[in-house]
Image (tube, rainbow, N blue to C red; front, side):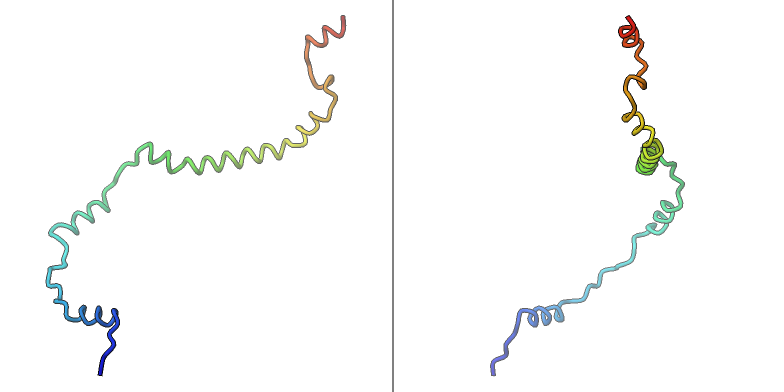
Length: 100
């Protein structure tokens, strides 16, 4: 009788026959002390780190203020474009030339 062995069954059988790993898996000496010292260290943030942290927030606030300013003054802008240009423009040279 011929047995049909697939690549998976051969791979699984080979893995079962592999020797076990007997190396020490513990952390090196002083590792826990170094990690806890780095974690509890007070590092003063640099200017570039603060700039990177707050730059996107300030960009969003400025954009919001810009949109708010345009919406609150939109009627004034429309009235300025619809009004008569000779009344809204205070050009002293044009007034002096038209008077003479």
